[in-house]
Each structure stands twice: as C-alpha cells, then as structure tokens.
Length: 199
Length: 199
Ligand SMILES: [Fe+3]
Ligand SMILES: [Fe+3]
Ligand SMILES: [Mg+2]
View 1 (cartoon, protein in one colour):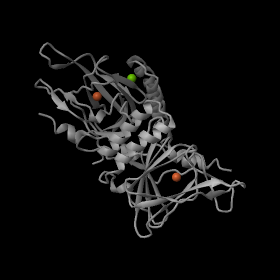
View 2 (spheres, chains in turn cyan, green):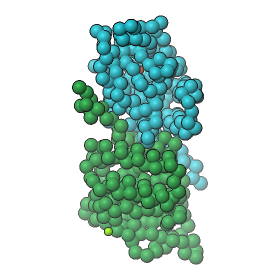
View 3 (cartoon, helix red, strand yellow):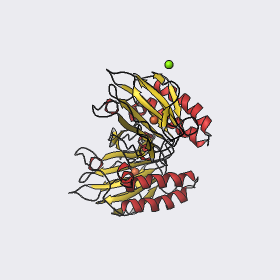
View 4 (cartoon, helix red, strand yellow):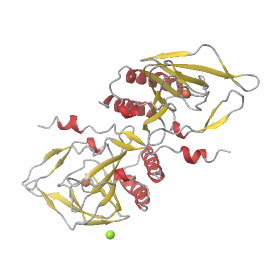
C-alpha cells in the first residue's frame, strides 16, 4: 500500500516542474506533505525501524536530477540530533509519535543559541526549514519511551549535501549525513491493480 | 561502486529536461547507455540474480514524474520473452553475456511475423525500440548455458505501462510487466567520498 508515497513523489515532481519560488514550494509542497502524513498505512516496516545507537535516516526516493529527496526519520526513545543546518529548503511532516524542533540563531560570537520556544510536532503537523525561514535547529523525540517517525522532503539529495553541526563548545564541524539504508522501497509497481482491470 | 548508474540517471534526467525529440533521445540517450554498459563493475548482485522460472526485471530507478525508468533484465540460460510491444521508446544496452532480438511486423491478418534477421547484442552494444523505429520483438538469451544481463531504459515507468503480447495463434493479449523486485538500490549515498574530503 505504498501508493500514497508514489502519488506524493509524482505531485512534488510536477510542482517543481513549474519552477516555483521557495515560498510556493513550502506552501504547496507543505500541503502535499500534510496529505501524505494524514494517514499512516503506507510506510513499509523496513523503513520504520529504530536503531538503539542512533536515529535512522531512510531514503525513500531521490529525484533523477537531485531536485528533491524524501527521507523517513526514525527516532528511538529519547534520540536527538546535534544542532545542525540544511543549506536547502526542507519540509518535515510528523507521521507517528511526536518531536520537538528547537530553532537556533548565531550570537555575537558566532555561536548557535536557542531562540524562542521549541516547536512540538504532533501527528499530521508540518514544519519548514531553510536559510530564509530559519536553518538551524536541534530535533529530538518528544517521547522517552517510544519510537517517533517524521517524513522529510529537501530541495536536494540531502544525504550528500555538505552542511554543518554546531558543537556546544562553539565553532562548526563539516557534516554529510548520508543514509541508513542501501535499499529503497519500490514505489513503482502498479501491475496488480492494472492487471485487475483486464477483461 | 554504484556511481556509474547514479551518473547515468542524472545525465538522462538532464537530457530529458532539454525536451528532446525521440531521435535525439535515442541518439544521445543511447550514447549515455553505451557508456554505462562499457563497464561491468557497478550492478549490485541482488539485481543480477536469475530465477529458474522466468527472466527477471529489476527496477533500478524510476523518475519522479515517470518520464523514464531504468531496468536490469536478467536472463537465465535459454530464457526468452513472448513477442511483445512497448508503446514508448526504449533503449537496450548489453552488460553481460549476449541476447538476440527478433523484430516482428504485422501481416495482412494482423498477426505478428518475424521480419529480417535477429539482431545479436554483445557486451557494450545498444539497440532501440519504439512505435516509430519498430516496437514489436521477441528477445532471448543467446546462451543456453549461462546468464545474460541487459540494462533497459524506457520513456515511462515501464512496469506499469499497458501493452501487449502476441501469441502464436494470433490476436493480442493485454500485458503489464510489473517488476521482480520490491526493493531498489540506493544510488544516492555519497557520504563516504564526501567525508573523505573533510580536513
Ligand atoms: Fe534538520
Ligand atoms: Fe522488449
Ligand atoms: Mg555485434
């Protein structure tokens, strides 16, 4: 039942074909993502499995020319990211459980400092990041005792983007996230439904 | 070492971005495919495995908006397709072993009949099909005692295209090929090479 993800990828590709500016990507792409995470019956188990050591980043789809990528983030109980940037637009939709995203800004010494309250994402919520709307944050599972999963879309092949983490002691470190998976789901087999229409 | 396939997918996507007509797709896309099958060090074993019962069609990549798909065809010893059409352009590049493609045309009774000699594809060779250049053929492994593998590119998500097979007794039957795999290779993780450039 992976059809909702296939439909999402196609619709996102057509949105980007129309050469939208970033506000439109975040608005219309955000609406597509909201539709995707409004139901939780399509993510195969292999891409929903936590790892006790670290949060998982399962690539679900990458566009042929790397205009966008779709990633399942699986948070084990209490797991968190370092403070990090993205350098491209990103959309985060909550599929299962809940997470907190704490925005950061640079202080006078170029050190990343928390700004405002952490945003809590519950099932169905969508948030955006980008160098324009705010690119620095730290994310953590809102639950200390269960798995949470968010679906992320980025304006690049995010696992291969050169970006940064910001350690507490100041400065920044080069960061390339990669992916947790060597195999992707096959979204594209519609043969069963099509054959069912044969006379 | 899946980089050659990733490079091929990106280059093919950029080619299609330029809105080429079919002759240019077959010419320039054919050149890209020739480069891809000029080396045989990139196809993961999971997508090179024959099945004793039938030839395998492993989807390697599908474009976000289904402009094209890339498929590994794995022929067990002596395996063959029925006579079939494609309804979209297709490019076939021989990666390992050899195959024969026998072109067909309709006779006065609308029956598919062999036309001309079968084309033999050896490693590195590339052939094209389409409703314009000839869309009907039957393919078989040139080897009765070993596996052959060809890499195919089509102007659609080929596994979901409504097409036809042509039985010996005449007429045609609806045909949707589907895919043999539920998991695709992850072409997109460049983190190892990128991290190796960190100071
Ligand atoms: Fe983030
Ligand atoms: Fe064919
Ligand atoms: Mg030859």
